[in-house]
Structure formats: structure tokens, C-alpha cells
Length: 194
Image (tube, rainbow, N blue to C red):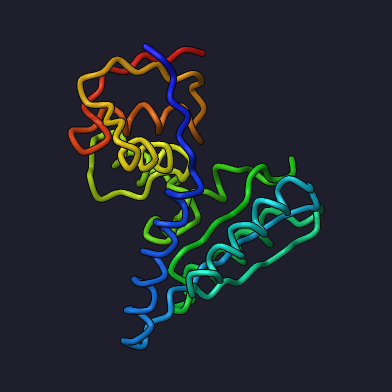
């Protein structure tokens, strides 16, 4: 069996065009989807990642709002900002960029995000729904993107033995859960190596 290189650029362009059309339809009804990103600190990689998210959202017509906080922000301050975003009717998705500084307990922040606005799929409600095979769940973007790329490139993992390297809560575990689901892009036998 030979390896196949999957080019993400063509797939990405197709997805963005589809999103642009869906957002345009929503906007024609008076609803502009809104994404809020929250960045605590000045980590260059995190700044770059959040910047790419905001640019991608804007490119397809989604309202994008970035909140950048200093590294010494307290957990209570951050929780207050998240509570405000949860209540904001113009914000439909919230992304709190990880990692957070050591004075902030990540799990408290992740649990404070409204599960219906949790674009990363890290809230325990979304994690639970994913692991029980719920087909209408917000899943972390990297694993969801891998499944989308596999399907769009004609590489359905159904019936195959798939090895996932890593068991992180951000990529490995959700990847395994998506591959196990009884759904397109799933129905695989999964081994997790770490």
C-alpha cells in the first residue's frame, strides 16, 4: 500500500466557498453570524492562530471580535468576559485560545463557555456528546478537519483499521471518537498509540 498526499488547499477553498454562501443566506435574513476570540497573553503562536481564525471568519462574512488580555489577567476577569460573550446575542461562537497562563484554571474557563457557543468542542457537554456518538455535536476543529479531508478526498475510513498517534483532549481522543462513530467518516476500528 502506498501513501497518498492529500492537498488541503483545494478542499479548504471549496469549504470556504460553501461557508461564504451559507453565511450570505443567513445575512439575507438579518442574521450575521458572530465569532468571539479571546487571547490571554502574548504567545506568538497563539496570536498567529487567533489571527488566522479571525481572518478566515471575516473572509466568509462572519462578524469577528477579538479580545486580547494581558498575561496577568485573573481567572475572575476572564470568566467575566466569557459570561458577557455568552450573553451577547450577536456572538454565536466563542473561542478561548489555549494554553492559558498558570494563574487561570483551564477547566473552569472551558466549563464557563456556553456549550452551544463552544466552537472548539471542549466543554464537557460537547465532549460527552462526542464520545456517545452524537451526530450533531461540535467537535474540535483539527479532528473534524481530518475527517472532512478524508471524505472529500475519497478516503473513507469505514471498515479500516486506523491508528491515532496521541491521546490529547484536543486532537487524539476526539479523533478516535469521530472515527468510531456510526456516521460518514467513522465506522473504523481504532487503535490509540501514545
